[in-house]
Image (cartoon, rainbow, N blue to C red; front, side, top):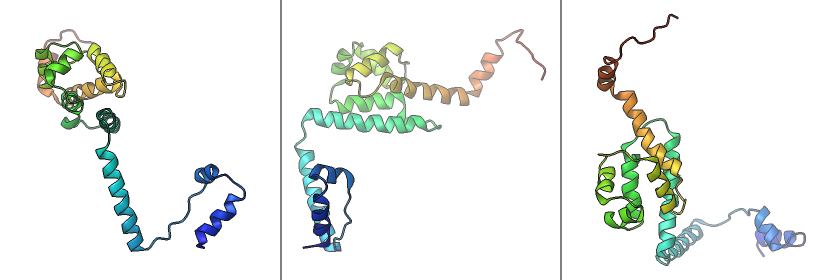
Length: 179
């Protein structure tokens, strides 16, 4: 009987199997060869489970991954084009395996408007954010979609010195304060 088996027998006297699983982690005493074999078996089991996923399970898994990546991105200060609203919307449509026309119909958008959104020729509105939230089964909240868009606006405000200069010239009689 191995050391671990002896420890397990002792613990079994006080706790049920479920309690043991919840409270104890047993040390790993595998050799390099045994560890490689366990990892190989784990990979095979994982690949088998991935192949046996339903389409719904695949979509949910991809959407959860997308949500976590967006959440992490939103916590960072810098803007990244890869996480623009349009890039994420393209990725979403790809994940759910819809044509642009099908998706546009499902969220009650004209296909031309969807195209303009995907190509950053038009800005999304709040109503679209609510539709996207509903469409994805509320996996990705409307606020995430909105923050993706607003992060680009923040970047434009920070860096668009030319438009800022043009618009400032249109202001007359601005307030002046002395410090």
